[in-house]
Image (cartoon, rainbow, N blue to C red; front, top):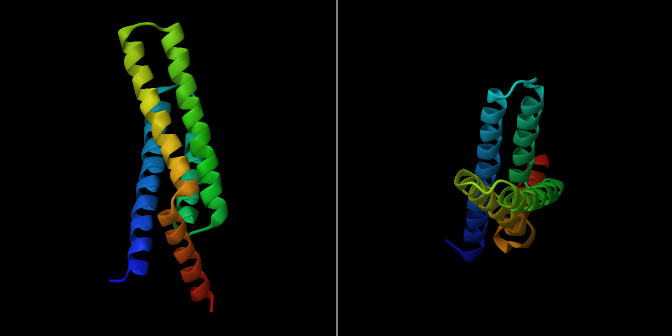
Length: 138
């Protein structure tokens, strides 16, 4: 196997992990929404949009990469802001546990965002997907 064929595989694995993170968080969000009173239309629409976004990301569409990176970065900032807010206002042991979970989510989202923007392996895989998609058209 040559170096060129290994790069897209490593990038593909990274993209699959990112897709798994997005879909897992969507499922968690649905679980939280089911416990709350209110319409289920918002989580349903979010789920559909997330599925579409990860599909287009996997297919190598550049806009999907950038939308995912921006949303992940925003999610990371919100997660870190949540840590600050919980620590300064709650001050209970369970609050600290929740703040720790928010910090982990914030770090994960920032890592996803940085990977989508800077990873050469992910860029190579997405370029490979673009070329493959282009070749199918002809």
